[in-house]
Length: 253
Image (cartoon, rainbow, N blue to C red; front, top):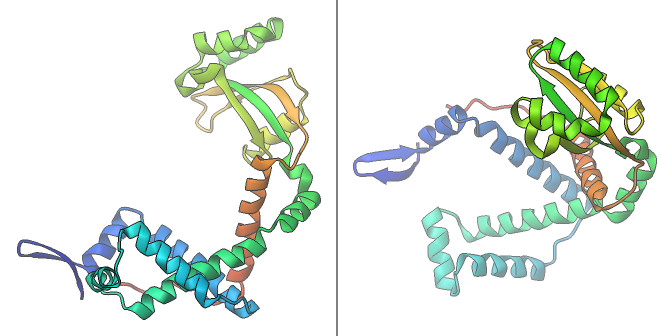
């Protein structure tokens, strides 16, 4: 086992480090990140993407400047302290460039536009607010009161809602398809602005939620939507790449 750091006579080794990552719930996330990065690099190489030597040099120089390593000797000492060779550092930089180039293709402007065109209903959004109450009786009374005076919604939230729902007058804001539980989503996206929906019970029926549909927005490819499209393109592309490889966990002792 390899040591990482020493505190007096106690050596914290790699076994302890990995065990701590597992117990704190960080291990799986790091492994998933590494797998995603490796899948991307493999795909870039398979596709024949090329990384120019000057690009590697520029990125290495950028790394050194960020770390405050102004001389070659400083960089060598830095890598020695990490136990990393120059070749390993170059591989690290090169893989990062492969990853960037591959993602530039996957999430290109053309790819974003095509995905949006094929899936535009998915990006319709609805602006909603909610009130959360702690009994079904109160929720039904609230529905009746709001039906008589819809403009009092924010005031009713401040006066009667429980928990965090009081913040911002109960305004949740814009939501996309897929961000609400299925039974609620169907009702919300089929409603008209001004409609009240509910009350919807929590799974344990201790809380009841009323929703107001404030506005509906047909899908448009604005920057917010483009960010979500790029995320979906990455996720779907990575899922497809994962099917091309055998990925299995290896016991770490």
